[in-house]
Length: 189
Length: 177
Image (cartoon, rainbow over all chains, first blue to last red):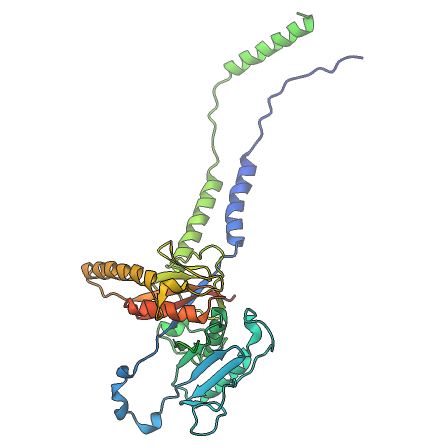
């Protein structure tokens, strides 16, 4: 049987198309990656009595709302004008019961959707309609409440569709933004 | 050596001679694609830096809470607070108990001692720098907290930063898409 003739050939791989594809893949992959887009919620510390000396000059019909939301393990306690929502007139609060109960009763604290944010947002909307110029709300909580629940509470009070970034640059505040300037106050431990 | 081997070597020599006789070709490198990728990367990076002037790199294992807020992060000093510790200027300065509370030896009447010392030093530096540049110092602190961070810890951190002359606070959140 005759042997096959072996002819030595130098084969040079053409790497150029591969390199082209590889180099174009890098930005494609970089763009496909999801980078977390950061934002911020600007909060204020509580204002003290010394900061409001011109109270006497204020007109009586411009009474501030003083909306306060206290996040508890069993719901939200909402109070306005130093009176708890639903309490007997003249009483700051009539019980330690929440104004808005939990959406998921019995859910652990780590379940951030346990609160009824929708009901809170509806209440904020109602207050906003009555006090259209008010933008601040005091938020406080019990010691064990996780930060995510506080943030979601702030979102509900501001309005979950509220886009405030343009208003911060001087444009008109959108109508769906309610109480978007939270004041964080220490709560009961 | 067999005749076959001789023939093979002769052919090899011929080939080598032909290769040597061949005029030297200049290799060319296609840099068009390289230019494409560099241009795309530059535009992409420029866009990223222009939209996010403050870069927040969370500490390992930290889960930043999600929010519908869309306000951009303003210039400030970041403090990373997780359920395992408080990190400032890339140094872990406060440790937490397994329950996620601040180590009781490091906090007194809501004031977190090690954090206050670090912040006071930073404030002095920042104030001096602002004075030299003829600018006012804005005492803004960016609190990069964990989603499980307890409210009591958050209040202690805010109280401590307030004592260190910071007057503006921002909670860093991840924007919901």
